[in-house]
Image (cartoon, rainbow, N blue to C red; front, side, top):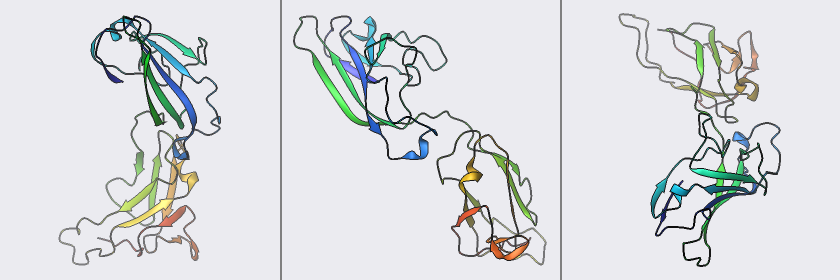
Length: 235
C-alpha cells in the first residue's frame, strides 16, 4: 500500500477497507470448492499512529492474514482488524475475489471525513515456487520419449505446455539432419496438471500424435498439439 497524507490525521481515523464485490471470471487461480461469497467482508484495517502523520507511506498488507506479516510476525502498521464488523481469527480475503479498496481519514481539525475508493481489484493468492520439478528426460532423449515431472503447486488450468526444440546436430554424425519441424509443442490434459503428484507421459518419437503401441489411436495424455508435424529426429 502506498499513499501520501498532506497533513497529520486524527489518530484512529485512518482506515483501509477491502469490500468484496464478487468472484473473478478467471477460474484458473480459484481453489477447488471456493465459496461464492466472502462472508467476512468488509475487511476493515485501522492503521497505527505512525501511518497517520503527514508524509508518504508505503508498507505491505498480507491478504492471507491482514493482521500478520508474511512470516507470521505481527504487522505493527495495522492497529486493529475487523471482519464484517467484528474481530475474528479469520482475516483473509478470498482468492479469486474482486474487491474495492476504500481509504478514509479525518484530519486533526475534525473536518469532514475524506475517502478514496479503488474498484475492480482482482485478488489471487499465490505462493512462489519452482514451476515444475522435471525428473525425465535428463541429458538425452530416447525412444520412447518419457516425461516425468511434478508440479509443486496447482497449475493455472490448461497452462502446461511442452516444447521440444531442436538446437543442433550431434557432432561428427553423418546421419544427422536438421529438424525442420522443430519445435514440437503440445498441451496436456487436466489430470496431467495435478499438483504434488509425480506424473509420467510416454511418447513414440516417430509420431508424437499417436499412441505408442497403436497408430490408430491418439496419444491419450495430450489435449492438443500446437505444432503441425510430429516426428522427432535422431542425432
